Image 1 (cartoon, helix red, strand yellow):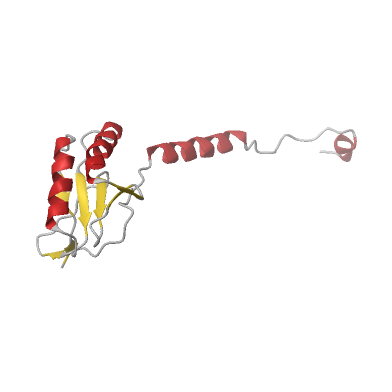
Image 2: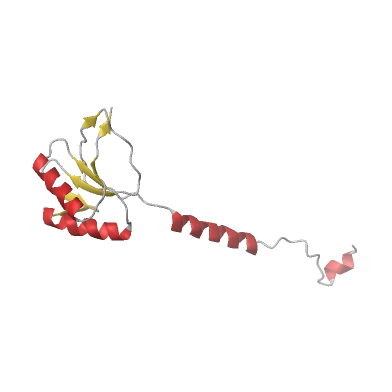
Length: 135
């Protein structure tokens, strides 16, 4: 190489083109965002009862929360017992085959728990379970 090439505006094309690498990175980012699953919490803080036979369930479940005052929560909002069925039906339409997990406080009434379980089954949920803490 002589110095006249650089003075005349001629340069070597030794630079790396970063465009294809950025395209791949953005495509991977979009792929991971689209395929990721987000855990929806029931929206209420409860103290779960302990159980020696507790089993871990899959993460794509529909969660219904019952607090100590027997208030029912779904997706961070309070719902009436009669509205549980419609909300579970809507959630099952979004993710078919998902199970319903009822996160009930240990001080909540059994009556409220049974009513929520009935509404979930009437909505078409194949699997309805109650969350507990493992020992």
